[in-house]
Image (tube, rainbow, N blue to C red; front, side):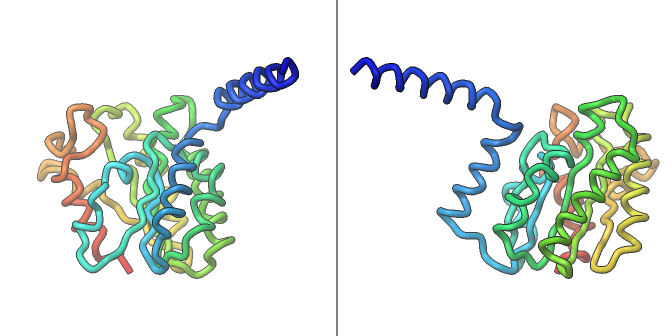
Length: 218
């Protein structure tokens, strides 16, 4: 009895330590695994990967009738996280296209981070994609100019330009610029497209994304 009790105590201590030391977004990735098991993702869908701007687009399928999406955005994630979980985010799927929205949080999480470091993280993830899917079309949606992160806009602009140049030179790769479409006639960001946090978008913002993204969808 004493041995069993001692084993239980050790087990609970180990479980507690493990739960406190899980990598960031571990639970999100486990949730994706559960979803894949309960409802196997269809082959030939468009796979969305990235941060909360995709996470909150829960009704993305209704914006694009006739298209099938698998949305694997997880809020708060960075390109570093996409690289860390690249196997889990890529291996289970057989997409006809992969679309990425990520990078905004990288710069927000570290004010000393340079745009080139974000670009390098993206290049690494692109290489991870090509290990699994050498020919599948890949598109990158530009980082939006969220009003709450105005001080980071210059860095977003530089990082976007680097990623665009990279994607323009790659086969089966597209850069989708949503920044200009989210501006008013005077060139200023339309704050009414955003929720109160001035970071995430209202449906009106996603309607703009739909119009810009639609010609790129396979």
